[in-house]
Length: 217
Image: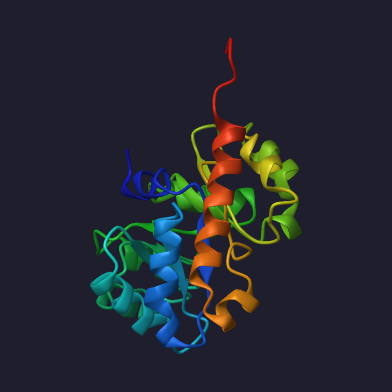
């Protein structure tokens, strides 16, 4: 089993976190872990991204923290230096693939087409991010990709929420999903960490109930 797949198997869902305020990093991570969501994608969309990864890696037991929105080799190296346990990219480039080959930190590349997926597979990567999921055809597109690529496992992200979560979970090639809906901005702004932990538990409950084997199966 690949490191990437092993990490995502521990994630009922992957919160995609873009922090404006570094002081929110540790209490937010603690709330999500407490709510049953230990795998955290901290995006590099804001200046707080890299220091947030380091803060969480140093201070939150049980958190499996990685970097998202990694767009080039420099981002990749900075993410590793900050303590990332995995790296997620929005797309796939040869330069990023070459950088991944030099490290033990697993890469989960973003793909949106069969050609991009074949490039990932050519480099031995069979666990990928499907992004932007809804804009790229949603669950129907992933179902179609499963035909020629049944061995690949996906983490779809982009446009996913409680309204369509189960559409993706019904697909056997989907290992988990990513999204930010578990931590609405209003709860972040107010520092309602208990509220975020409660929302995380609800997401875990829904996923568990939906994916639990039915009696007689």
